[in-house]
Each structure stands twice: as C-alpha cells, then as structure tokens.
Image (tube, rainbow, N blue to C red; front, side, top):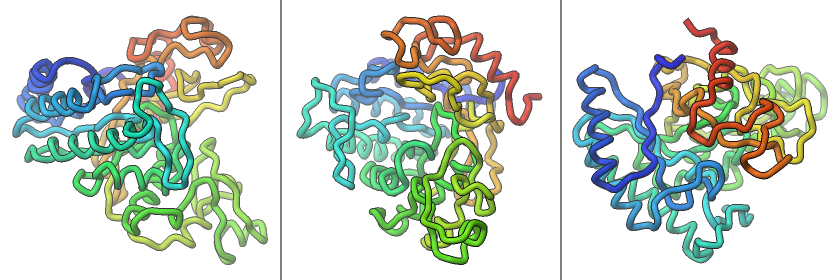
Length: 358
C-alpha cells in the first residue's frame, strides 16, 4: 500500500518555504520521469476550524503562498489538487438555493468571507494555470455531500472553466461507480449553466418508461443511497439512476478525477447508534480502492488517484460521545490527530483492499 503513488500535501509555511518544498518534489519527480500529485491545503479558515484547522491568516497571505507554490513548480509537470473541502465548506456561505450554511466562524467577516473564498480560488487558478505544465482540479466534494446543482454552482464561481476540471471524494469513502455518475451530472450541469434544473442525487424520479418505473410501477422518486453502487439497472429504488439519466440531457465537457485511496469497501454504515456517527472520520472496516491510473474507461474521468494518504488519521473521532481527545468507541483508543499515522487503520485498509493489493 505505501509504495503505491500518493499525493504530497503542502499545508503550511512561508511563500519561500513552500516554494522550496514544492520545487524539491517536482524536481525529484522529473528525475524519475513521473508526474507528482501536489495538494495545496492552506486556505484561511481551512476545514472551518475542525480536525484539520489551520491555513493562511488572510487573503493576501494566501495569495502570496500560492505564488510561492506556483513558482516552485515552474515549468515542470504537476497535477495539483486545490484545497480539499475548500468549496464544500465555505465560511458564511449562502447557497444559490438561499440556505445559509453551518460554517460561521466568529473571526470571519460574515459580509465578505464567502466572496473572499471565491476570490482566492480564482487567484489560485490563474496563478497555477499560468505554469505551462500544470493540470489543476478544484473541489467537487462527493456523491454523499453537496447536491449536483450546488457543487456545479460553486465550481463555476471558483473558476473551474479555466482549470482542467474538478476532483471528487478527497479523503472520503464513496463508491467509484457512484462518483462516476455524480461527476458526470456535475459536468452536465456546468455545461447547461448550472442552477436548479440539474440532476439531483437526492431525488431520482423520472418519466414513465424508465427502468425503475417499469420495474416497480408508478414512480415518484427517492434519494439515492451511498450504501450500494448506483446504476440504471439496479433493482433497489435507492440505487437506481435510470430516472435521472432519462430526464437529463446535457452533454458534459468538464473533466474530473476521483480519489480511490480508501473507497474499496464503500462508505461505513454504523451498527451502533451514536449522537454523531462521524462516518467520514476513521470509519472501521474500510479498504483501499482502485490503484492510481489514467485508464478509466470514461472519457470524462481523467484519472483515479490517491489524494488522501491511506493510513493517515482523519482526526480524533469520538462519535459525539465526548470532547476531542477522548476514546473513539469504534477503535477503543484515542485516535491520532488529523494527518498522523494510524497503524491499526492502515493495516485494515491494506487487508480489506478492493481489488486486493499485489
């Protein structure tokens, strides 16, 4: 598992420090005739002060940091993953549907914080794409998070049209098949200009004559469930996508990549009732997924990549049973801090790899 190609994360430092660190990695990759995957993860109010809190102090500091990051790449080849969760979690953000989201840090200015987030993304897109050999992807969240229209709207505001596309499932566990559907719908939504007329994985109704309507009769639609693989021929309504694909017509053009580092067993369904299951945080019984490759069989999917480093903790999970730093009831220990090595989890991911590791 540990010798499989994985991303390199850059999370702190001055502009000169990140420039030196990035340069060291891209030069090493160049000598090996490989393309490095670099994660830029330093945006202000990162992770909304949760387990992976941190980031630059303000907009200008972030722009300077990005300039250093880009300078470190220079003319060398690199695939850049820009700010995981950076569009999924935006401080003081009201969605295009009019919902004020939960991330409301008191240190951020409610009047400007969301606009500054998009300003920083657009700046980063232009700075990184000014380098001739950078492939750049923005945060498209995953199939169990933002609805298609919301993800497409945020990507458009962040400058995805000037990037190479978006990425899905960073550090998460959703099934690859579901992510392929979700990413295709986002791509289609971007092509038609976004908005409420796009597909929605939380309602899979469709016209008569679709596979699901033919299977069970009159069909009003349900939310798709991430606990199984989606397809147009699935016999269980919560996994059937035929209704969405029958009523959605736009041709997608925006490409994407998928993080398959930990999704070999799909997402976790707790068997115990917890106040907050934290199904994204060190879930037990998971396994690594498909090995990184650019051979995907889907014209819109540029690659399967390992963005998250399997074996690194998601944080000190407690399932809502106590403050951070208390025991995780699923593991029976205090989990390592976010980004630290979690030996028990690493071994489990390797043993339950799907397909098996070789």
